[in-house]
Length: 108
Image (tube, rainbow, N blue to C red; front, top):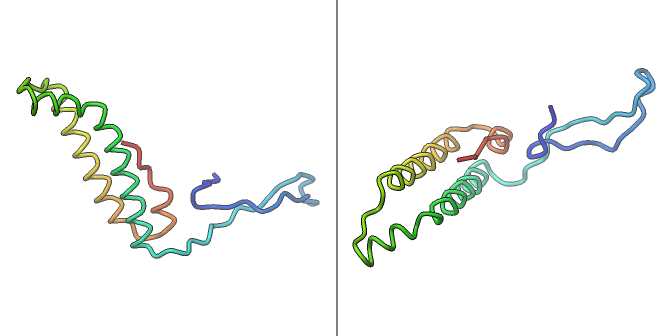
């Protein structure tokens, strides 16, 4: 299967032997180092996590300003999300190829 994050498609061409239009799939050339690519992907995971945490930040502010308890379900949700971010960061750091890093599922 074609993965647009790590692969590119050639121009479409006629395959005479199979009588179809087709294209070739090849790996993209990634000009940054593995370390920089990991850092970029980790930054993206953290940004996704930040965006999700923002939805419940008002509970934290309410607790700080008015000492109103944060519901246990919200605390659990936030803790699970923070743990998921840490897990994703560790998993990304364990990857050893640029292609694997690009194809890694960063969904939280």
